[in-house]
Amino acid sequence: MTIAIFITYSAIALNVISVLVLLFGVVKCIFSFVKNEFSSRKSRLQDIRVELGGYILLSLEILIPADILKTIIEPTYEDLIILGSIVLIRTVLSISLAKEIKSISDERKNTDS
Image 1 (cartoon, rainbow, N blue to C red):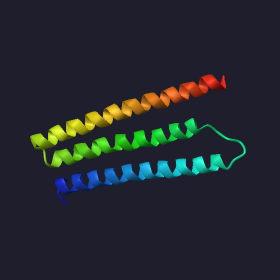
Image 2 (cartoon, rainbow, N blue to C red; image 1 turned 180 degrees about the horizontal axis):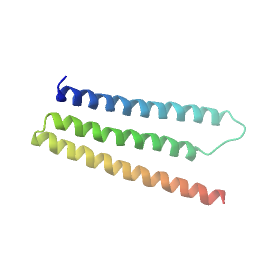
Image 3 (cartoon, helix red, strand yellow; image 1 turned 90 degrees about the vertical axis):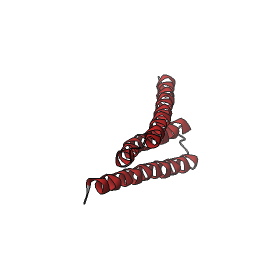
Image 4 (cartoon, rainbow, N blue to C red; image 1 turned 60 degrees about the vertical axis):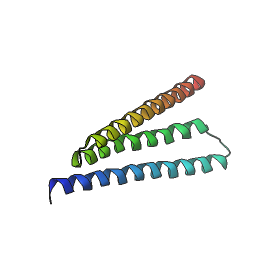
């Protein structure tokens, strides 16, 4: 097995792991939401949003190394520009999502106090 094939399979594996993390988080949060709706003791929907946001954030962070690995195999200028754009967009999304999650968590702590 050549290194290029290994890197290709590694990138594919990271993409699959990212999708699985995202799907797991979505399914888990859907179950939490449904359980919450039929429960007499309602929890906050913000808690479910924070949990889902964490899974989305983790999924995005797993995709970045996968894109880097793909670019290692075929390093053209076009691919590097695309990679830079994707990493920038995902980083901005990750930062925005992390701020929103922190804001919701801080808001929840202040309300609970």
